[in-house]
Amino acid sequence: MTDAHANNLHRLIAACVGADRARALLEMLRIDPAFGEARPTVSRAEMAMALNALLFGDLLERVPSGAAYVHRVIDAGGRIAFDHGALRTIRFPSGPTGALPGGIDAFTRILAPLGYAHARAYPLPALRMTGHAWCHRDLPEAIPQFFVSELHVDRFSEGFQQSAARVFGASRDPLDGAALEVLAAFEGGAQVPFALAVSVLPTLAAAFDRQHEPCALADYEALLSESAEAAWIATEGNAFNHATDRVADVDALSAELRAAGMPIKDKVELSAGGRVRQTALRADPVLRRFRHEGDMVSRSVPGSFYEFITRDVDPATGSLDLAFDSSNAQGIFAMTKAA
Image 1 (cartoon, rainbow, N blue to C red):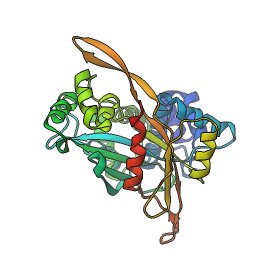
Image 2 (tube, helix red, strand yellow):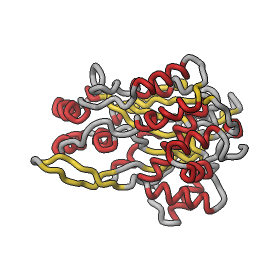
Image 3 (cartoon, rainbow, N blue to C red):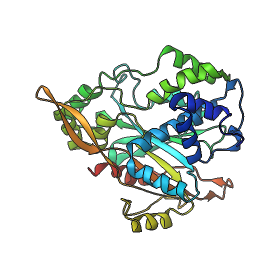
């Protein structure tokens, strides 16, 4: 990459979080040389990568164990190969989630215009969820994928559904008219003037957050009794559930981090095809507020976490196997069950 302080990617991120924070984020991540230009317009790939960098930085601020790992890599002279970010959504039996489009619909309208293609759906039957992988069309190995999961409310009890309606039913829509216009321009194949792109980037990043008010403790406990994932969405919303580092040997790294005393998962998940191996740090706890008997109370609940993945080359294509695995995903999702 050319001068990191002059290219579009740095300028986009710096306008949102400041020059120093932008520099720090770009020094953490492996950035493809394709992002080395400074131009008066912004491509969909640049916008997608800038959004990913902002979301990666947000996760590190919420996940101290992940931040500690990243600094460990940086101190050793390495960089993070950001493989994918994951988020969770709610799907009601019909209609939107308040003002927010239901399930993955809320993010399809962001990801597709930014150059992502829906790669595959992954049933997660043990969780009563479905995962959806989104891979970038322009630079599929260099721009992080998104793994967006939907929790199907209609697969739970009537009491659960009533609590879900109270918690999520008045969700707001974070996208305004300006953001939708920029997304429409990208979807139409246009590049967007820099000033216009940077004006809506914070709005796009804000979509990856909680869009509903703090819930009643009784409703949280009702959701938790049937689904740790639903309870997690109740407190964390659509924030990154985890961000993932693509590493050369996840098994060796797992052993190394365990020996260093980091809270690593007990086992490495292996995909059915044998080419994708995953493990993760356990979720860091966070304090969240709940409504209870006319007052607000705080509880410690599972927050987000940091994941690791090794992808082997698919001999049929000669490229990295960028697929996911339903069994792996269900094993990784258990990281947010530990309080």
